[in-house]
Image 1 (cartoon, rainbow, N blue to C red):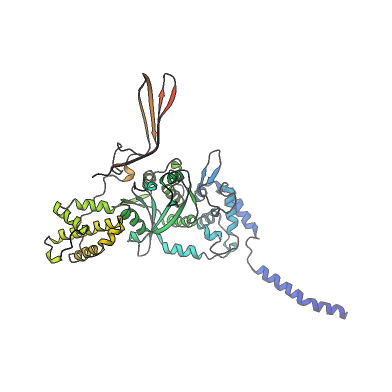
Image 2: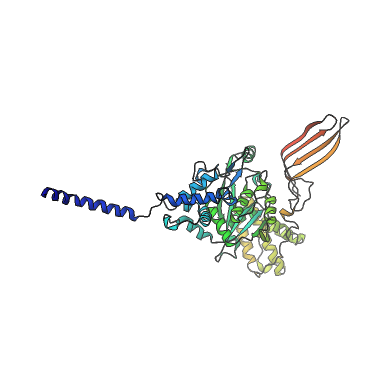
Length: 499
């Protein structure tokens, strides 16, 4: 009896320890092991057929492929929660649901990495938040707080013939903040998509890889003033800005999805999956139910994509931002020959800046001459660094002299072009003609998918510029029912600069 009591007493500490361990274990919330709620959500998603929902397909960028089935245009394993997620929307949705209930590192948790998916699925399926793991998405919250997105603007920098990747133009999105920066567009952020090309690639190699998806495409968020400096000042491209009528909820979802794709590679295709195409894919996520990308499976020309956004009634206002050269040209034409010569001499430091007391023109004329001389001097400096170093002192003296006159704006507003880029002719052309060859009648068929011929109507396009892509012409001879290829041009670029 004593032995039994002794054994019982000795075992009591072990029993108490086991009991305490069980209490501690079951006091923590159960996430991944509580699979009943996950199974319930998956069954509900199947009932609602969410994997085939247009919005889910837009979120994961699924598109039909030849031979049947779907494939995501994202070419990065980090974008998927299932190994077969790129090809199977159902498996990706179910893996995403399961991943949301797994424990893990905060900023790397699927809930933090895919906030747009979480937001949409939670609204459709009504998650039990008591079963969700506590997460602190610090990086995402800080990034979102920096943007403070209030509205979105579609930005179209016009064609730039000196850059092959931009010869059709370019589009990007401007994220307009809600704080004290909202009245200063240059303080906003730009959402851009571009090919991560190798600078050492020559023109032929660049064209080949650009056409056949040899470069990864990268999304980036940069200050808007940097892009304006690049497009308007360095590349001398006029910029059109299309304010979109997105609601706040749509803006928020666009920001969530931007976070999801910000580090994801999409193979870049110059004619199809390019900058303009993926701006449309982001807008499809922002506004459920719209189809913007389906019409651009063969080619996505920026002016055509802008036209599609306008046709979808997403634009509420349009503004024009002239390039540096456009402003200089228009303002130069307002001066007489003597004043123009003075501007050129001052800008190139051919003559010193005279003391203000010796400037005999009226204040408006003097201000215009000094301002334009400084602007032209800055333009020359951007084209050639050695000019900047040489004329730095002259530029400072021009600004100093201009500061002695009234600060009011002495120039009228820049006159914008009669036609905007999207108001020009359509970029595809089909021509039918006829003729005779070796006494045989033929019917001529010509198809040019892009973009503009020197003899095409000019409004909406750059003067003196010709870009024909994949131009093909064939002749059909009814007499012997034969079809012969007459001409095929991969690319034809012509730029005529007026002198």
